[in-house]
Image (cartoon, rainbow, N blue to C red; front, side, top):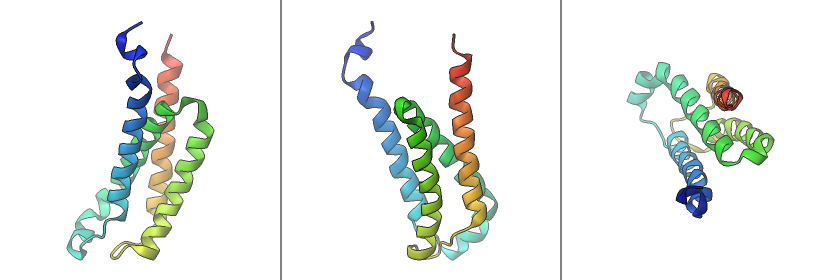
Length: 122
């Protein structure tokens, strides 16, 4: 058994990355946009949502392997809630149905990546 698996960092390290990704996503989702940037980001915004929620899903599913159903449920709730909170509380941001769809597709893609990786392991 390697030294990494014996140390407590083996258990803490994936959790650290999961929560770091969550904090970064919160900063990205809840930072007010400047009006000039809104037009430039319109097309790439959906891709950003898809990639961000895909990465969150992968990191959290790998970190919390025993609670995958709960992780997926909480990520879906976060995807919906983040759009509503943007509409109600963040200046210059609105709730967008297509952002919600991109969030959901990101969660689905992240789940598929983890599921596929585990299915190909011997």
